[in-house]
Length: 233
Length: 290
Image 1 (cartoon, one colour):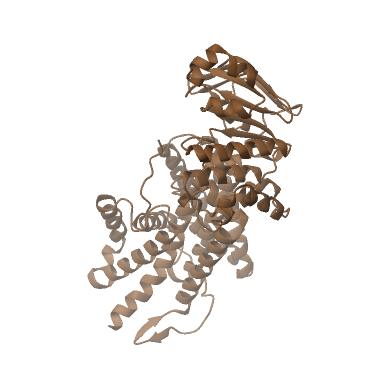
Image 2 (cartoon, one colour; image 1 turned 45 degrees about the vertical axis):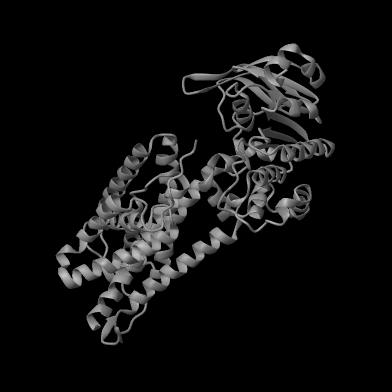
């Protein structure tokens, strides 16, 4: 479904991705694990088209994405939940969600709205509240709900557990699991490698802008180097 | 008392125009962090185009509509060919680009139109209305009503339509807006178009009272900028209040001190705001992202 081939990307003169390749098949949950600054977020931003790439190719369902603007990629079926939630603070919860469905404006989105409120009941009771006043957990739910409103086929999730209480982390990861059952493909970036690998089918370990190793979630959980570096055992 | 009322009327009329210019600054500043010093030229283009089409025999209502369309086209061109190619440059670069655009538009107007002062007949005729001894021109009421209508329309657009909310979203968080599929370039272009339209309408409304010429934009931009600063740059409510307050201050300074000092008020306001309250009356606290 998604093929990333030898992608390079820089911030100014500093190259953050030195030729990264990975692929994601339809219906999988793939996780990227790695330290802060390894390039995971840069890769997701490149897939979404908000970070330019200097070499390599990104293909989505056999279509090359080079030259396709970020906003068109959403219409093609790629939605991202960015790091740090990035909700539209001055707008209400419901407006945030309706804007999530921006690429499908003109359609009635009531069914999707109902679905998001069902996934995250906490949002339903706060639909008129401005997003900036929500708690961190609620903002994370809103950011995920907003991305789902675009009805993506591929969902990019960047650090959904960051700064959340353990109970909320579990709730969010449960939702991710249920999205897979709903037919979504998920590319999940997580610092919490153990939690991510617990729900993922496969994973890639990213180190300083390169893929260090990859394998099934089980293999990575059993890998001594991964265990030492990312699982703290 | 009569005097005070008289100064208040004229202050509010001029202030309404400053408020509209300040609103144009605010719209563009919010959408792309650019202070558009060509905002005054939008006002000039609205008035001058209407005048010259009128002289060419076009009925005035039609001429006014065409003037707004033309100004919007200029606003869109300014965004597309001057601001957009420089995206990612620093604030100073972008501001200098808008100053350049302002000089260019003024020069073009001088060549295409002329260098004389022009006026338009008032939209509604009749004598000045007398209220407690003070006189108010019917055209002043037209200006105030026009400003109120523009404010209501703009508010409804931003609060009640998804496109308006997409503009708010783009202003609040540009990357996140792109990630939900908003064409943020188009959203910024739209803010230039709306700012141009508001400027043009302001220019058409004020011309029967204040005369227009190719270079009225310079002073109007400065006044509008002072109003936006006073209100707190980026705040729409602040722009309107700032415009009205500046108009009143000017009218009082002209009436009670000397009309020679009228234009100094705007500069004084800019200085005081910068020194004493850089955020203005309604400005938001600067947010540092870490």
